[in-house]
Amino acid sequence: MIRAGGMLVMAVAKGQIQSDNSYQYTCGNCKGIGHFMDSKTGEYEDCTHCYNLDYDKLLEAFRLARGERYYAILKAILSLKGKAIADSAIVRRNANANIKLTIADLLHLLMEFNFPRNRFKPLVEWLEETRTLPIGVYNRIHDSRFKIADGLKQLGYEA
Ligand SMILES: [Zn+2]
Image 1 (cartoon, rainbow, N blue to C red):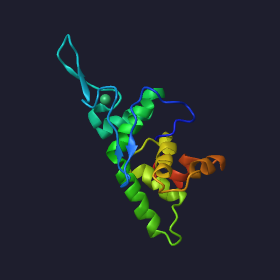
Image 2 (image 1 turned 60 degrees about the vertical axis):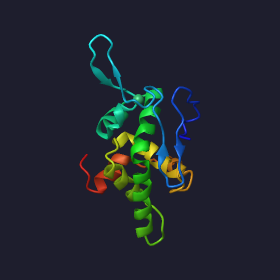
Image 3 (image 1 turned 90 degrees about the vertical axis):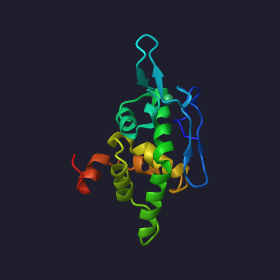
Image 4 (image 1 turned 60 degrees about the horizontal axis):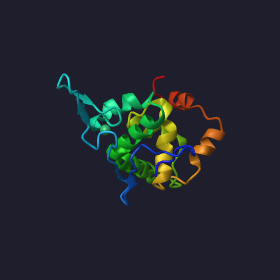
């Protein structure tokens, strides 16, 4: 289950993490069809909760989405890339001498998957959910007042 900051998420369909860290989720807004047909014009419009699983459109919407739509978009993103994110994190973790992920690794992951820079939290929480990271890492980073933008700049990413 994707944590929702203590908020009960009612209208967004439930997803499920599989043992291989993939995420099984079907959009509840369109029942997985991905689009709606306008009954007057006959034109198709993307479902604004899953964008027919177009990753680029999902990322663009993810940056500013709020509330239910935010959680639906996050779940759609994880259904596409959740396993790849966890797999990449595991490769990075295993390349480190102490077999632990660093904040730099997490920032590289954010950029590798083109996440909006304001969506570091759900990325880290996904790694916690899949047990790729220990639970509580995001909270510790947050409590340390670490600045994502500064970290990215130090790693050579454009502001
Ligand atoms: Zn949908």
